[in-house]
Image (cartoon, rainbow, N blue to C red):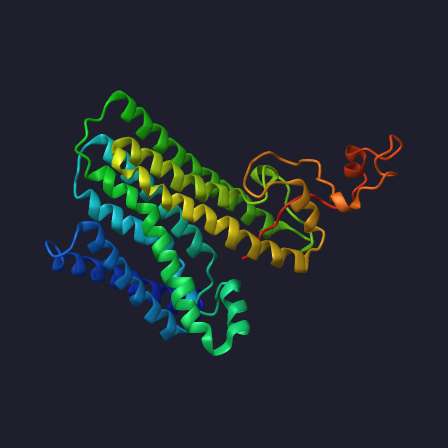
Length: 329
């Protein structure tokens, strides 16, 4: 039986994202001719974000915004597409839909309802107190909205292109879509393997090191970042004027490298100190597998540099740590 928190949460999301669609459509219908199309969509996006924020405050749960990351791009790309039947544009739209639907599904299957809020939000509640909702508005709602808009913006250039789509352009579009769809598959596989691991592990201190999680520390983040770069490649191949929009996937990459990964890894280290060995031997998003740890220069001594010192490989074999990864909610 579905619990009350989950039923209330589903109802809140239906209201939130149904309202988001109506709000964005109304805004876009009112604005044509008054401001440029990109600006009109950005304004509609911001107004929709404020609607979701109001509902987050109403239900005292910032996780109501979380699906925005994957739902808003579907709304935006579909509006911009406007029935363009060129096969190149259909492929680009399909790439966005496949990614967005998969990521949205993954969120809802793991969300227990209004009784659950992402641990990141809960942690900031404790730290900032009465300043939590201003922080939530700027950091957890508006900032991701801006980043996602920058990421989806190349699609507008592709859908409005008047350039002749040459063989080279078509190859670029095909390669970009292939990267995006492949990245979505990688992210889905990583999420599925992680879910299976969490459902079956016996020891909570064990860290995962099988499947794609043996490639790098965050294969799901790698898939997410590659999706945005593949989408940009497809769009810039269709319209060279979109070259500058590389700021979108670049900003999203920086978000994961500078914010998301440090947050989750600091949490991992607090509960599983041996995770430091994973950090030392595996790249965060470059799929190189395990690598010998780089020694700290300050720890190098003349004795350590002598031929009798243990080799790096031997040190790794003697390590008591399980070099693997588990990423909690």
